[in-house]
Image (cartoon, rainbow, N blue to C red; front, side, top):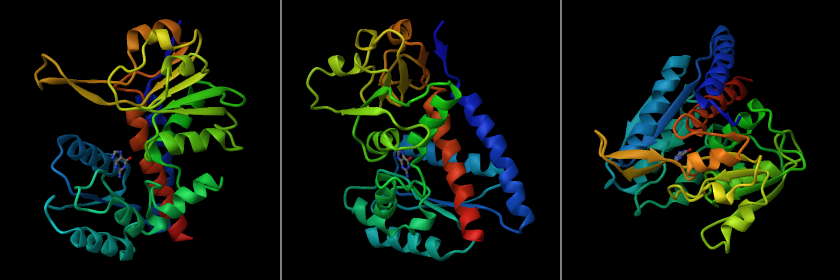
Length: 291
Ligand code: GUN
């Protein structure tokens, strides 16, 4: 029987553990605070940010949210981030990506105080991750490590194939998988849109991490018997539903499930973990700043 990993259940266990940490911080007079900034009218980004804020509230983390008109000057965004950096009640600062084209994304990532960079996107924190000494592990790859652990999938000595080279998922995932640390020690291949014969690469994998952003890119014919398949994709495709679309992963679930021993569904797999690990990083940031 294929094990379909319940990301909501794993995320709930992490949140329960975090609740104890939040209570302990409260006893020291510290309420963890997460500030989010949205400079976009993209419906998916709006949904993600409001989910993050709601998750904070449920856990007793103080949520502060600012929205900016997508046409506003970039300096306005940088000023808001600077104020959040200075605010002692704010322990984590997150600018929802993507930002509009006229805003220099790299400058925004650099503007966040690295000690408050709960996304782990600041170049100092990217450097620390690559050097094997992460301050904050980026939320989605960290959540995937937790899912693998919960599903009893040991990465040590395995061949992991990461499909996708984004700064948010593919690159940090590959870096975590090659670390000399639990959840790492995997032989890791990174594939992307220019990879020739993707199926030949994924068929060699003990663990496939699909994070390319293409609906149902990977089907069962591309999966080795007994592999673990982690689907990071959240793609909106037109469908005859109330909303006019449905969410599908980067993996064609039914055919991949025939081959895999362990697989994550979309929705209900990796998605809930991203938010749980954001809460984890925010609590860690508050704890570090309280020391
Ligand atoms: N956009 C898509 N994923 C993320 C994320 O994890 N963090 C931020 N800040 N923006 C995103």
